[in-house]
Length: 216
Image 1 (cartoon, one colour):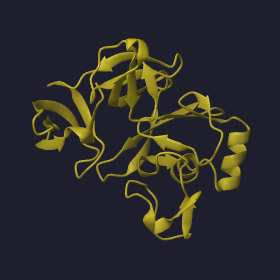
Image 2 (cartoon, one colour; image 1 turned 90 degrees about the vertical axis):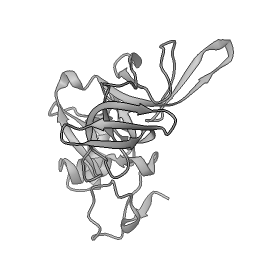
Image 3 (cartoon, helix red, strand yellow; image 1 turned 180 degrees about the vertical axis):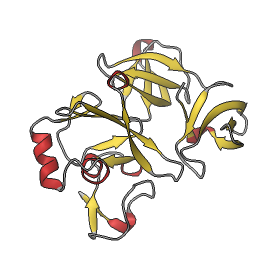
Image 4 (cartoon, one colour; image 1 turned 60 degrees about the horizontal axis):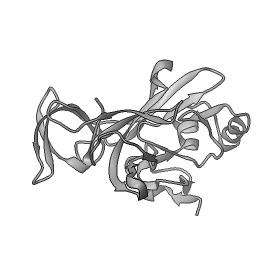
């Protein structure tokens, strides 16, 4: 089904609960992504309706992580990069402290990379290591990383530039739970309870490791 009832959309979606009965559903990552249609029409307001969005896509005016968008239902995930080709504007999907996904304008030199979390790691035939990332990507890489670390991906070369390790002093963002949108520095890691203590600069909070992403 390509649509979902408006009242049933994830609470992270920045859409009003009243309006048309249905909204478009992303073709991947329903619970943790936004359709490009909603971003272009409702957040960036560069199109007034679905027809205009489809025309922009047809003219190859929209890039997602450096590649052409093919479908207005394409899902945009956390830290994905959107490029508006004609205006040379660049944006990334972030999350606010009210748990809502949001679009943030970035500079051109920031549009060439993105961060993703390692959610699984497999050893394949030939002792090759496959990293499964939070944005659905899989990489074969010899880089030394663990599950729950993050990686910095070069969107032009489509390669991993470096590993961002989950350690004390690491800078992280909370992407799920009641502390969503908070950023800070890890002060303590409790591997037994799978919890970290984060100093946000205003307070110290305890968050599950599965709800955070290392960003620096």
